[in-house]
Picture 1 (tube, rainbow, N blue to C red):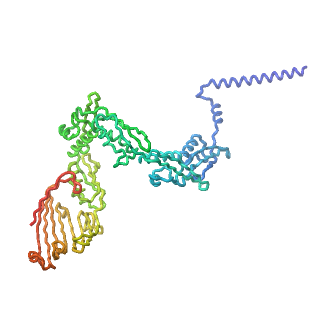
Picture 2 (picture 1 turned 90 degrees about the vertical axis):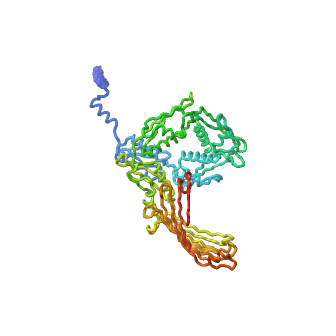
Length: 621
């Protein structure tokens, strides 16, 4: 009995000690929770750090790659061996690999490895395209389509690119009126090369023809006027009537432009198509004309150099109470800028503000002119003349350094440069200098071919067989060996031979003698001709001689020429039935002549004039 009592006492003591321990733990936990969350105790911080240990990347492994090297894949990621494993860096690595477009799937895993982690990237590559082929095509060649595809041999196969290519092919056919085209794509993998062949199966269908075009909603203009504006045409004897989706869409813009030019700036246009049997359709064009707007008040400000009257006179299209058109307004604003440009204000600008009043149908226009200052030419730079000498270009310019910029002079300079025939294109640009009112003028030219070599032959009842050969250089320079080009001179050599005639000609012209506006040149010739077929009796005529030419510009459009000609004419081999007058000319005679010309030429182009006129008077002695 005593034994049991002792044991019970021991048990009681143990329970007492255990209870005290539990109470101590409870009190300590309660004390911790009572402290502020943002000021943990030193013991707590130590526990937290120990609860989130860091791991070092001990190894990186790539699995699943077939054609792309491991080094190329590792070069795309930021995770490195020996660095801390960071989940955000791993996530970015996955995005970078996927965004390369080389992979259809990218996953990552980690394994314990030598006290750290091994990072494993599982790669599933997109297959590389081997060949791209097409089914039999009628309307397009495979080369034409292939050039426009995103799916190309050697690239990675991409489903989105395939879908884009199918849409592109449909659009391509739709532009030819083939709107019923169907496309299927087949891919065939090659287990040996790990490449895939792509085959486009295109069911082209047939071209749709237009039976009829109806226009609805056009109260102001007749159907014929609208149909004349568009390019889509019905099937007739003179037109195939094939539908082109691209042209039809552009036709809606043409209709809107037509209405806008006539003041209907709110007009809208759309169309619907109705399919008919046997590949025909009807097109129904719906137009909402809206209100026709007229020009209301024209107000301007900021102009001090050019008067309001001058500006209104320059505005040829936009007048009060006339039909308003934004396109015509833009043209007139360009004319206003030209007014300023011609006076040296090359950076003058005009800002327009329009105010529409649907109730009155009027458009009020406000023009704000920003005049800027006068600009003068600092330097003239020539660009693009690989062969032509600078002086040949500069002497044609009507504007020089130190002068005020002038639009009319620049325009005339361009005309003169084009008239040389040496350039495909002539343009001007302006460059800033260290002075605000001084700008460099840059002349930009694109040189054309100026040399020619031609030959030919033929047959006629008079001359029988005839042939010729001709060499000409319109931009010749006798001092520029070995190319002999770039001096602005003209040299021509022509030889002509046949059964009844033989001709030789050498011609040379220097348009600026010693760089003065005086032209000089000469022609040397020899001609031989059997006149038997011309007048019914036989004799031969030979001419050897030449002429010297001088020319002078008296003004921009007026020039004069003086020509001295001398030749020796030999008449021989006369038959007995020739006339007495011709018989008296037998032998060699010397003929001299002086000719003068006065020319007024105000045309804007020597090759394709659009304005101006030419008047010429000649006197020969």
